[in-house]
Image (cartoon, helix red, strand yellow):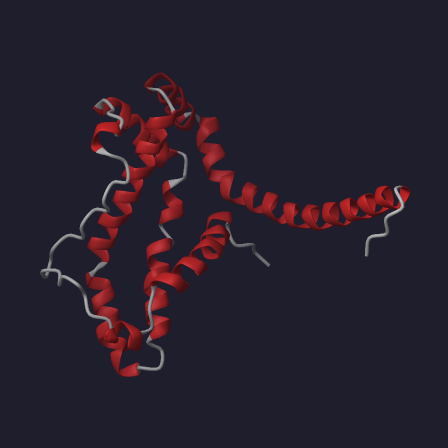
Length: 197
């Protein structure tokens, strides 16, 4: 049996909670009224910055370009690929009791694909700024060179499978080490006259 890639596993786990909290049922969505109706075809507004403009770091175009290249070359960006389709599937699942909506809903979701791609690009830009904030141009240049090398490409290619195996190994290790720690704590506490259940 083939294993799900790490990015799919982690995305499913993380997004399950997010989807449950952010995607309403069809009935609930119909009951909600938007505070300000968006104009047809209008691009979604960018989220308001949480940092005052005066405190926002400024980067050179080359610095940001290198950071974006790392985001793409490292494989980080591909973890975003399954998130937006997951939202669409969750919306379709919420409407499963309304088969009359299926055709229109499929068409609407398909028509929104370009807008959703823009949303993904926004996240890529955000990730690039995070890299740029943490790494210098010189460091990013070396990292980009690595990911463009044969070894770097091989690293990215095998990363999902390697990390997937690590996650599975950690599950076994976590159970074993938790049991071991409890046994050891009980033994040491017993030496001090305490009995733990």
